Structures are given as C-alpha cells and as structure tokens.
Image (cartoon, rainbow, N blue to C red; front, side, top):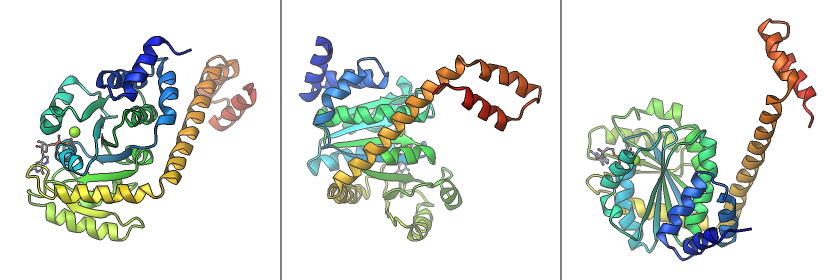
Length: 312
Ligand SMILES: Nc1nc2c(ncn2[C@@H]2O[C@H](COP(=O)(O)OP(=O)(O)O)[C@@H](O)[C@H]2O)c(=O)[nH]1
Ligand SMILES: [Mg+2]
C-alpha cells in the first residue's frame, strides 16, 4: 500500500518538481522503507536518460570540468543532472559548498539538478542506491546524468558498470604518472581526459597515455583539456556526445547487461545478509571459534563444518 505522501512525492518526481526529486533521492539514499515503493512506481518510466561517469583522483579537476561541460551539453540540447559520489570520505557540507563554488555556472542554474551522495557502508551499498537514484532522475526527465566519483580500481569498475560512458580524468602532479596509471587502471574507460593542460607535464602525460591506450583492446580516445582555462571543453563535450550516441544503438543490450549485474548484486547481498544472521544464531559456528583459537581445527575444516551445519 503506497502512502498518500509517497504518491505525492512520486507524482512530483514525474513532473520534474525539484523538492520531490530531492526527497525521493534522500529516501532511496538512506534506504528508508518507502524506498522500494518509490523505485517500483518509477521503474517503468525509466530508460531514457544517458549516464556518464567521471572518475579520477581527488583534485584532478572533475568538479571544475563538469561545471564547464554543463553549458556545452545544454547547447547540445540535453537537460543535465549531476551526482557527486565519494565512497572514501563522508561528504560534509563544506565539500558540497566547495563543489558549488567550482561549479558556479551550474549551482545558480535551476535547469541543473545537483546532488552529493555520501559514503554509507561499503561501496556496493552506494552502487545499489546510485542505480535507483539514477532511475529517479531519469523518470524526472533529466536526459543526461553526470556522475563524479573519486577513485580508481574497484570504484572505477563499479561505476563503469552503472553508466553508459566512463571518462577517466588524469592530471599531472597528482601521482598520475604512467607507472601508477598502468598499475591502478583496471578499466581504461571510454574516454581518457588529461586535465590541467595549462600546467607543464600535461604534454608528457598525454603522450604516455596515448601510447598506453594504443595497446589496450578498448583504445579509448585521449583528450587534453584545461578546465580552468576552458580549453578543449567543447571538443570534449562533442566526443562524449558521440560516445553516448554510439551506445544508443545498442541500448537494449547495455540495459540488459546492467540489469543482470543489478539482479546478481541484489541476490548475492540478500543471501549474504541471510547467512550472516544465520551464523549469529549458529552454535557450531560459535563453538568452532574456540576450537580454532586452540588450534584444534584448521580454518578450512572449520568452514566446511559450519556450512554443513547451516540449515539451507
Ligand atoms: N591549473 C589548473 N587547475 C585546475 C584545472 N582544473 C581544476 N583545477 C584546480 O584543481 C583543484 C581541484 O579541482 P576540483 O574540480 O575540485 O577537483 P576534483 O576533486 O577532481 O573534483 C581546484 O583548485 C581547481 O581550481 C585546470 O585545468 N588547470
Ligand atoms: Mg570534486
């Protein structure tokens, strides 16, 4: 049974009302009990929005870049929403404020919806709520959702599974040397951006990246920009748009793949929760911890014994 309050939030979301959108996102992000009702109500009204993930180390200039990209996307005819995700540190009011300063052009633009999502628990948790937050923005009529996230490795992989196009932002002087890039890059992304082209060192980084990606299977484009000086931004926006258009032709397959990841994710996490609460009540498990501590049994045997004792 959907409460009148939830119905009115959902109605507001579908009409693009910002307060309703913000409230719906909070409910989903905090995993409140109404979260499911909201997602169920908007689910069949989604599938239109395109998503672009921008990842990279802190200070690479992602927020500045997004601030400059938004007007370009507006002139290409897109309505834009921005989500900033930081799984490593809780986002404080200050950080949001800082981003608002860096994205001045968009912070005062009421066509743009902007929201920071903090870190609650594991990254997996964020990626679960992020999917549903994207759905809310999609149903609200935003046709381009830009997602800023800090980090490499696991985080990058998770984000790239959620979005249509992944862009990785590199910059000189933040440890983005080619050795680190090779070591840390699990996915090369669809576009590699070398930001801070106004600084020395950007040219070398650009050349190394070009060489590096030419050996990869994906062969992403490498684009040099200066977010601060506003150089190369139009070209970057056009390139991202081209990638978006390319993904449109295989949208059904992409969507299916994403849904499969999500389903698997939800099944596994639900099983993990169930098993975890079963373990808390399982006497074999508790007894075995003592026997393990006394070296009466090894961890392999102990695992098998507990699994045998669980009532499936
Ligand atoms: N020199 C230079 N600085 C930049 C450029 N883009 C961003 N910055 C600066 O880099 C710092 C971090 O930028 P920010 O956008 O917050 O990075 P984020 O952490 O990746 O979001 C800020 O002081 C920006 O002014 C650029 O193209 N050139
Ligand atoms: Mg930022």
